[in-house]
Length: 356
Ligand code: UD1
Image 1: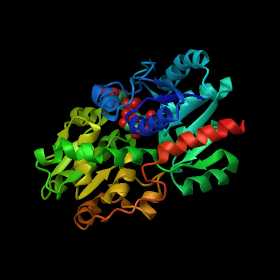
Image 2: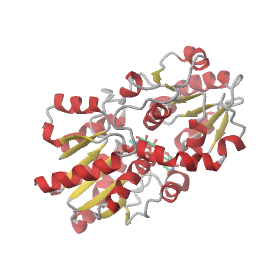
Image 3: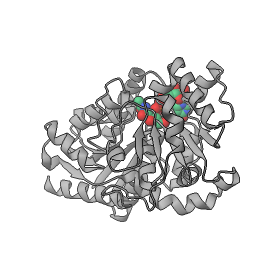
Image 4: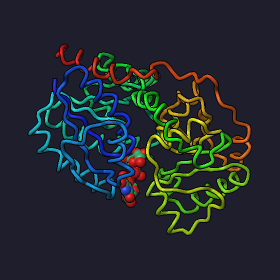
């Protein structure tokens, strides 16, 4: 069996790592194509190094752009690569533009598509990722889900139950495997993080691109920072907006994006996380750390119903919510968030290859 893995943006890399490792252990032939959607050292190469993923075989170097331009560039540059590689499966991860764009190319060329993290829905089409999720799932031949609610969603959308396999959460494989190395960085202690601290990440256009919204969010964060240390490793999109708008975040400690292990060291011992990231909603649930998500909806409802996540739409309530937060000890992660999901992805691919 030959797999062609697609990655492009930061959240893809911790998802690829355990699947690639399991593929190696099973003796599968594997090719990694990086679209180049993310390209900064801190957003891309650092993750490959830290997570032990081999360097990509091909980098399409598409870079940044509007959704249409970026998607179109990926489609155009990926087609000859796929024609040359002729894999048995294209394996795509998550919901970024690289996921959808390459699934379109494969579907048109008759190459089977496996979608890791299938079946998540926010039902909010103003979110670019929701469009990517729906299109990718419609085109995929094998729908590999992170939680059982996603199976039900896909069946309700008319997908064949034979094409849906619950594998669990691959990103949690990476999280669990990385905890000792995160602790070994000593990063949190070196920055004075004392367990009362908050970790903030924000990068969604809905929070960051609208100046009025970003000002309100930052105002709420600076109020929180009066009583607790706040670490805010900021995405390039967010840094740019903060700079352009000249927003003063008071005592909030804003930094460049941090390496995976350093973020994990901060998050694992935090009092709470405030975020709009999909990944952190899941990671905090797995760690038992309270999470406040600054969004009106989530495509990961299991982090609310079974985890530590809470959606916050009223920013004036943020401070009292955060102050009242208590961790879940020991953490009680959802079914299949157990460190073995990558192996189940490979097992499902092998089983479905045989079935064809
Ligand atoms: C993308 C994904 C989003 C994911 C996020 C994680 C889509 C539609 N969005 O959003 O789902 O949660 O990645 O980070 O696929 N930039 C840099 N250096 C980089 C990459 C980006 O400076 O290495 C800057 C550029 O100014 C760029 C902006 O960030 O225009 C946004 O990057 P882009 O990949 O378009 O979207 P993200 O917000 O990163």
